[in-house]
Image (cartoon, rainbow, N blue to C red; front, side, top):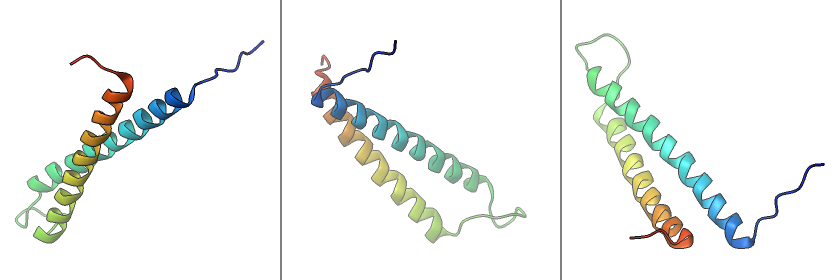
Length: 84
């Protein structure tokens, strides 16, 4: 017999926030890896590379995601009542 796991509203919010944060952390890591790879591919090396505009746009996305991740981490810490 399977027992359904019943979560309280606060537990659901905490889980949703943690899941969303985990997904964005992964996205931030992937974008950072792309930027790092791009840094090694410049005009002198054959192959695709980003121009300054595109690289800057990716960096802006990483900064935005990082700030959002930090905000969600702070909310997660408050909800989970993590020790200081």
